[in-house]
Length: 339
Image: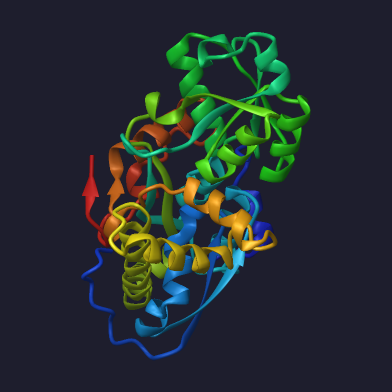
């Protein structure tokens, strides 16, 4: 187990680019921690926990820090710049886990039958050339943030099932991928519904399929922390998961189960709007936030079968060391595991 500064964490990446009912431990009140997130609806567990005081109830004074891609978040965890984060598994995260710097401790969002998940998108130019299904993407370009990102994994799994070849284009940031897709500089991409649906509605992009049809029960995002926090700061980690899980529960109840009716949806949208599409008027942002609803994992339950499939793919592609194990990557002691 090691603690890394940002420079060392980057170097170690090498060639790869708790249930709601959990009681908060009796840790010192107002313990300051930083939590990493993307400005995605699928990260709403953290947002709700901040807004409704669930982290504070658990004794934590949380500062949210926002990123534009998964791998920089993994570096920030390893270097100690942030304490906990929610993001997709990447090659960089796996490499840092093998070095003893990071542990996945729970699940955040998964693909689920019957609920809109990630869309498979193509540019208008590609669509007009007849690319109206994933099977017709052979030889086409597929957008990534970085090589070894979750977008890389998803694209490869689609290509494998369709028997096609994709040309991967790493563009570093989600915003850059969106711009490239809209302008036709890349042909295709996968992304969560709160981003996909407005793009489709603009006419500049077309939806041609769903990731869940290729990766059912895909563990899209995970909760992770430093190995030090997972092994030496167990009370703090339990407190974080307790607060986070309450936020997840409230989000699901309002947005998926409609437990509070329209009033409950409106109140939840108001909370999330502070973090997602914050620069847009509420009326405009609300539609995208509602469209982006995905069920989050109750109690931060983790689909270990999906995580293992991701790990094996990264290893098979030579994006991480072939000797890395699930024990290196995941600490299963904190939440329920499935799969």
